[in-house]
Image (tube, rainbow, N blue to C red):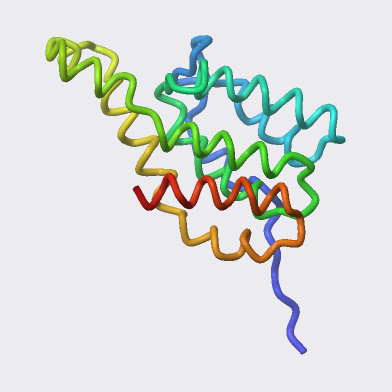
Amino acid sequence: MTATKRTAPLADLGHVPWPEIKDSTGSAAAIPFLLTTVARGDADSADTALRQLRRRICQFGFVVDEATAATVPFLWELARLPQVTCRAEILRLLKSIADTRQWETTAAAYPKLLHHPDNYVGWERAARDAVHAQRGVLRQLLAEPDTELVRATTELAETLTD
């Protein structure tokens, strides 16, 4: 029997230049700490960290920032880990990100926005693409015994098939 090498959760966090990209508060430097707290914290700590993360990468439930697309793969990773206490909420956050059209809709009415130094429309598209890129995980999550998780997975799946 050969041993399977398991990597630690969020092992690739250091590959993202977090201090150099923006979230809704400015620098995204705090995102790795928040993701780690979601991964390893007790239920209360994880919920608090996820709420803070939501405010930073999907403010008001529909406004994404530069750091959102970089954060999405880590959210998918956390959603797959059974020890994470807020997996259904993570899937709801991914659904909110997948639903975002704020900047794209605004740019359709005001094309000057497409030339703004901050590429809001591009960030929004990249964030949606990042959510869609890992939709293959949904099948695994639909097989989970947790009914709340399955419900959140189903809602996300419906969004991703639109």
